[in-house]
Image (cartoon, rainbow, N blue to C red; front, side, top):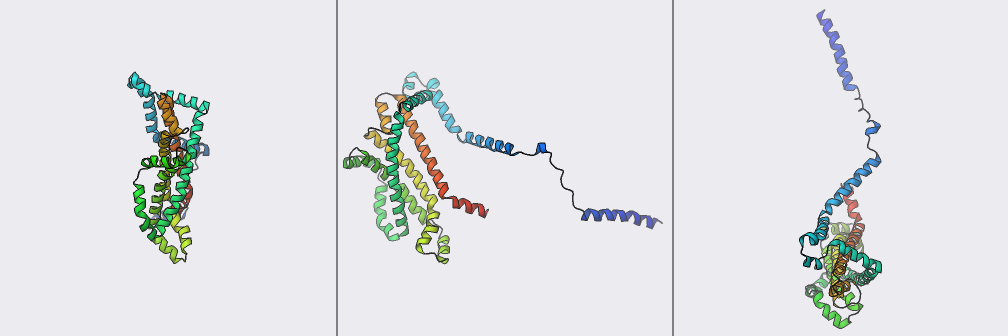
Length: 306
């Protein structure tokens, strides 16, 4: 009798265990509609995160601008404030120059010279750099001469360019091209020489000829290094041009700065300096965008590999 009752009690327990093993677990309870994240909430969250990141990255610049505004007023002596006006006075002077159209004319003159010299340096530097890196004998012949001129400061040759080409546009464009040429040239050579040899061997094993190898493997792999030189050249072209315009010019940001300084228009002088900084920053952002555009294949390869 006891054995029969034990078996009857054990049978349902076995059935429960078996059912627990074979039955499918019920799905989790549905999330109420009020607790589900909406697309609008996700966008707000992303915008908030982007704003926070932007404020953190620009904290140093904001602190510098605050120091520029408050320092001359509360920390400097009255005599120092004459030569270092607060930021709001500089912005007011910049606004007056903008309203009169003066600053636009100087920016246009500087940009025209800088773009012309930078474009010439870009074409010559990339072309010659690819040839030198591809042909070893040409590198051995030209390298001593290039090292000689590379270590000669561009501004040291400004009197030479002025004597040979005059004080017109030719001398300023030429000095900009000279200053921007060597960063492009040297980084192009370095970019081609640092291509992974395994990529070259793999391309040759697939039957690519020299032209296709250069087009499909060498040049794309060297693009990041080349653009590093291009960004350096863009900065150098602006800085050297400003110095050249200070020596002899009738228009341009360099002329505006030195003319305002000699006329004791100190806020106008700082307005010109601020414009040069913003112009250089804009050129750098433009070149970074171009680099990302021409290096999209690296992002695609990285995403596919991950």
